Length: 464
Image 1 (cartoon, rainbow, N blue to C red):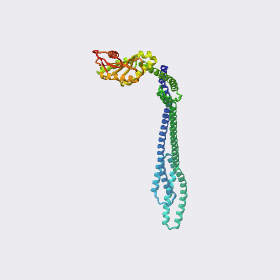
Image 2: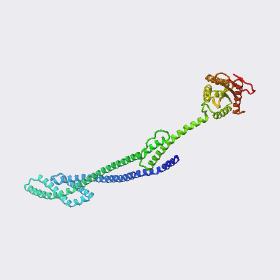
Image 3: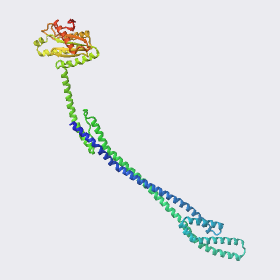
Image 4: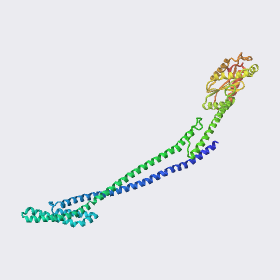
């Protein structure tokens, strides 16, 4: 099932890439199109408004200058035409007419209006000059008849001037037509200002739509992609740890939803597998202990002793250090068993094992060799140290004071020990030490039991 789940997860992971890319493109393409289209339209409209505004502003400035000149000519004309005793001479009239003709050349429509009134303007010019001359003669003449005649001529000239002024009034109206053009340009500029404000509102609206779209994209991505994936990551991180698995965030993206369902199934399976694995580990530890330790005494068994002896032999040979062995046997254990029963015999072996374990050092290896026989491996221990260790073990067992009615050595359970220690140089084998310790144990039994005997290759023995 684990293999099938892994294959499913791999398949889902491979299929996740394409839908997520398609989902991203589906969200981003409309946004990009909106931004590009809207930006292009707004830029074009903005440039058009700027171009039209610049052109209109130029026309407006030109019209404003033209109107200023027209107003000046208008003022001069009315000053010359409306005042009979004006002090302006013919040169002033000529300058005003030339300026009027220049304006007519600049503005075709104004020129068409000025041409029909030039004759009236010239007639008015002549009338005002004649009135000026007659007025000057009246001031100098004392003749009553000449005064009456001059006044009569002035009245006639004034009537003609009134007719010419009516024509001039029409001309002045045509001169002020440029003001309407200025008003039109002003209206155009106002419209362009309104268009510019509209474009500004469009830009703000587009920005608002874009931000809303982005906010919706971010919210959708967080809700349907990011948060479910973060939940899946946390879920995967705690799979198989034994910790309570967090709940997954639901997603409408099909591939992510499939991954979530697969992970939930995997979590259930791994939870069951973890329980089974812990049980198997516990059983394996028990089996390992049973394979290495003696079930009755709790010491290493014969199989573990053989393995550890080989290992310590190799270490002593590599380091050129001595290795010691102490073999021991419970004195007259068969008699003890026969007289007190097998249960008492098992209790005796357990107590002896406790005494042996209590007497040895931390790096020594104590094991049950078989039956009532025990053995201790003494790493980096010379003969004197090995013999001292054996004596500690013998004394420790004797202090337990287990009653032994059939013992030839005393009222309590005792042990006999054989001791050997040799410098491992690679010439012999590990079993040689066991044979030597066993031989020394035989001598301890021959010499009265309840004693430790050190092996001597020359068949001599030393007791303590």
